Every structure is written in C-alpha cells, then in structure tokens.
Length: 115
Image (tube, rainbow, N blue to C red; front, side):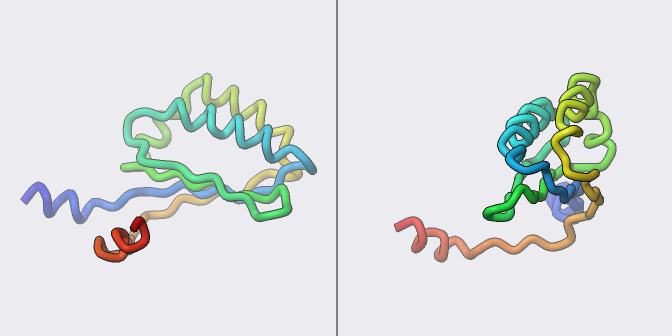
C-alpha cells in the first residue's frame, strides 16, 4: 500500500519567469547554481531555461512539498538572492504549481534514441 500512496503523492514546482539586464544572464546563472546547490531535504531537481538570443529565462524547481521548499530558504540562500536582485530588468513573476501529470517516453523509445 505504501507504493500506491507514494504514487498518489504529487511534487510541487516553483516557477519564476524574468528578464535580466542586458548581458547579465551568465552572472545570474552562476548565482542560481549556487542557490540551488544549497537545497537539501525535499529538493528533487531544478532547471534554468534561457530564451535563445535574449536575457529572458525561466527557473523551474521541483520539491516534495511546499514546506520543504520554504525550509530551504536559509540566510545564505537569501544573501544569494540579494546579490541576484540587481541583475533583473524588473522583478520576476513567481508561481507555485502541483505536478499532476508526467509523461516519459517508453523504455524501448529511450533505448532506440541512445543506440
């Protein structure tokens, strides 16, 4: 029954969309990597996307639950965010989502791609 309960439990996702000042995306990326490297309990994975040819991006961070996400906002983490804040052209838009569907390629498709 435990496996079934785990199957029903959904991940939570933090999404931030923003635009950095011209030429500041690389510096922001380095700070993002530092901040994410501090995450511990409940952290699943993170992505940083950049729209090609621009300083616009989307940060996506997966968590087991919202409480874990909030618990990872340490003083060191907050200091990194302060360093990053002046790099934004304007404040990023942030949202929280619940992951309700995940579709991955079938195993035989993965094997064909890797061959």
